[in-house]
Every structure is written in structure tokens, then in C-alpha cells.
Image (cartoon, rainbow, N blue to C red):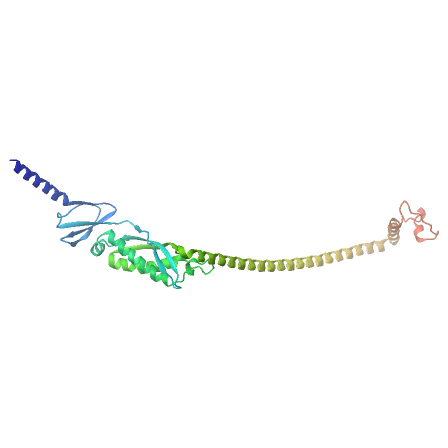
Length: 295
């Protein structure tokens, strides 16, 4: 009796395990690819609860729908001018064709390995065809790393999509640096280059300052000359008008004009300490006599 119970329990557990393995759930961030006897059975399974044949007849591969990032792609390369550099990069990717992805590489571990190999190969081609100074120079000829990243992406993306069902969204270089043993000499060269550029900028600045100063002096002299000419013209016109007024006044009353001129003369030659000795018929003495003052 006990033996029968044990067998029954074993059968119940076995049936329960089989029944449990017939159901599976796809998370909302995933997609599922079902295989029967190792052969892929389309279509792609969307999020939700699904039914399949028990293992080992059927197997479900769950793949991520979200964007994933592959970091830590550090490796050493030799540039076009035979200089060693250390490059650290990243790759952003997602699965665009789950069936092809499962058929080609099955797991994320394999996917990471394939993408790592593609990154190393493309960066080796792109960076090895450029001189080291193209990336680390401080001069005006500094080359943007984005151009190299775009070229690497253009090499990786078509292969990953065609062979593995992976969409490569972005490829980047996080760090482009030098091996430890090469850094002192390169840093010294960069300091010298910066000093050379600074000297060049100072020379250009001084040249521009001299040019601006010369232009300012010329403009100042031009303005002063124009102002002097205009002032001379205004003064001449004023003197002409004054002379015209005086001439008109003289013509209207010559005697009064002579009287005013005489008073001006007295004001210039006589003060409180002045003593004059003049003959009675002197022109200056004429108006000192009140009888000669014009009315």
C-alpha cells in the first residue's frame, strides 16, 4: 500500500512538473521565440501568458526589447604613425529581429561577444588609419572624435543587423589616451605646442592692436581737421557779419562810431594810475571835453 502511494505521489509530481512547463510568461520588456525540437516556430511571442509543449519538446527563448549598453571596450591600438594608444568605448544596441537573433546566437552572452569583436575590428581599422595627433592635438587641426565614431558605426551596424538581427544604435569612444609609459613625453610636447599657439595668438593680437590704433589715430586726425575747417568757416562768417554790422553802423552815424572807437582807445591806454600830457588839439583829448561828445 505504501509503495502504491509513493508511486502515485511521484506520478502526480511528474504530471505537475510537465503541466507547469507547458505554460510560460513573457514580460512586457521582452519578446519570446519558441523552438520545437530545436527548430524555431514563428511567430514571435508578445508579452503575456502562453502555452507550449513540455520540455524537451519545446523551449522558449526570451529576448530583451529594451536598449542595452555594452561598456568596458578597452583595448590598445597602433595608430598610422606607429604610436600606441588606449581606446575605451561603448556600443548601444537592441534586438530588432528576435528570430534571426535566436537562430544566430541564442543568448545575450554570445551577442555581447559578437558585438565586442565587431567593435574591436572596426576601431582597429578606423583609428589605425589616423595619426595619434589627429585626436590629441591642441592645435587648430584637432579632429573631432565624432567623425571616427560615425565611421565605426557605419561599419558595425550593417553586419550586426544582417547576421545577428541586432540594431546598433550608437557607437562611441569614451576615452582616447596614452599608455602610461608614453605619457610624460607626449604631455611635454603638448605643453610646448600650447606655448607655441599662445605666442602666435599674442603676435596676432598685437598686430591687430597696432592696426586698430593706427586707424583710430587717422580717424581722430580726420575728425579734428574737419572740425577745424568747419570752425574756421564759422568764425570767418561771423567776422564778416560783424564787419558788415559795423560798416552799416559807421555809415549811418560816423561821428558816433568815432566816439565809440575813442572810448575803446581810452579804455586800453588809461587806468587810475595813468597821467596823460596831451596838446589841446590832440584827437584823444577831443572827447574829454564834454562839448565835443556827439548827441
